[in-house]
Image (cartoon, rainbow, N blue to C red; front, top):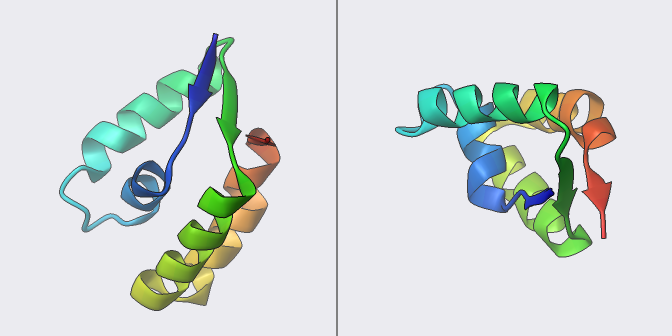
Length: 75
């Protein structure tokens, strides 16, 4: 099975102050240990990077690039 990750999911995982952060983080951790392919599009990535930089700063963008994106297949 494949799971599509959208901008709101990425931001909820990255932002500890997001109201869905705990739920998103739990789901994220389960997905990482599962067999599902994690997918998104380049458009989602552009939107996510722009919003993460504006709302959370460059450190969040670095975390996304270094820790999250290597686990995602961009289609």
